[in-house]
Image (cartoon, rainbow, N blue to C red; front, side, top):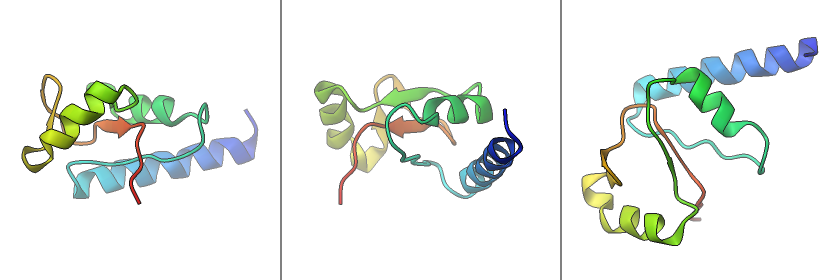
Length: 87
């Protein structure tokens, strides 16, 4: 692991944990296979992870937006929801 990579990881971790204290939902957007899940799981090891890549899961989340529902109940603070971006 290079020095530059460690610094990027340290900054991303600090920013992600800081933002998660201010908002119940945090979105992490980056190209595929870039470490989003690894970063989120290392910052929040006890939180649930929800992927919206499956169309039925995305539809369920869209239907329950007003109540912030996700499969299995409410997403915990700092949990990751990924897989769909709306402009």
